[in-house]
Length: 202
Image 1 (cartoon, rainbow, N blue to C red):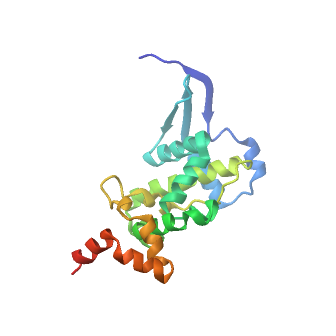
Image 2 (cartoon, rainbow, N blue to C red; image 1 turned 45 degrees about the vertical axis):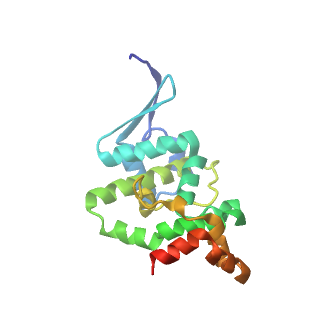
Image 3 (cartoon, one colour; image 1 turned 30 degrees about the horizontal axis):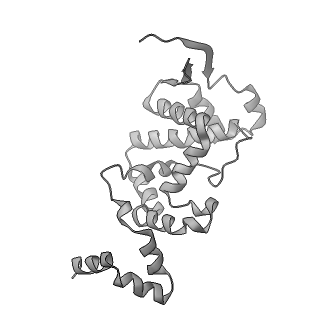
């Protein structure tokens, strides 16, 4: 199938003469611009991004940058959900959903896993964080709801995968009852699912 690339080519490195004046020069911003120099993004007639880089890390940098261009709010929300931090922006109604997520995902463990990762994997995770932070630095009009600065270890919050723990098996109503008032706890222990859990551990 033949398609035609739009004439506008986004070269991340060249795209921001303005950015150089807006952001103070720091080792971090210098690193972003250096990696951006290795990335070219072409959008075809359907708006689909085609990312080219000199390394896998460059491709990750460009890929997450284009995702942020398309819908930063969704990108941030995905990570808020994955890390159990939705209540920080959506309120008390998400507290038990966050608690359930934290039964599966522990930021302290993710940071340890990042520190123990081989250099090639760290490079990919660093590029993920750098691509998002570079996007935010170039788009000051975009206001994150919670995550003002992305960290490389955050990429590991999605490593449960489709064959990971079945988080949906944890009933939110029962979780709330367990941590609620004494009467609610009694209701939890009387529930059929709780009885089965109890028998499984006898």
